[in-house]
Image 1: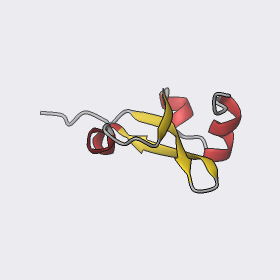
Image 2: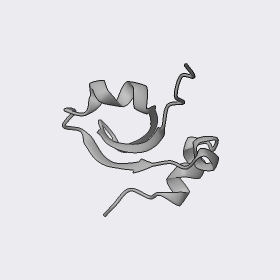
Image 3: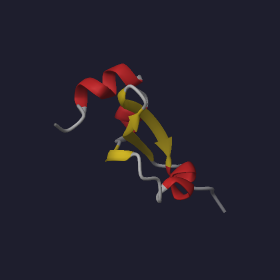
Image 4: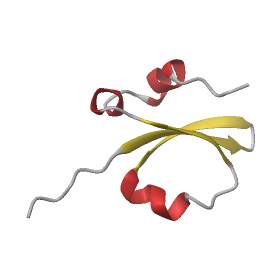
Length: 64
């Protein structure tokens, strides 16, 4: 049986100094679903999953 690859998400969370970007795998996401500080979550394509947080922040800016 082949293990499935995790999906990746780009997340904006409400940090102590304002919105902070993070990248989470689907493996880690399940334990984080109840967090109250998540502003928005974007599913990433395989190509986007390889990008840096700075690059992802430009592609998926925090909602106003």
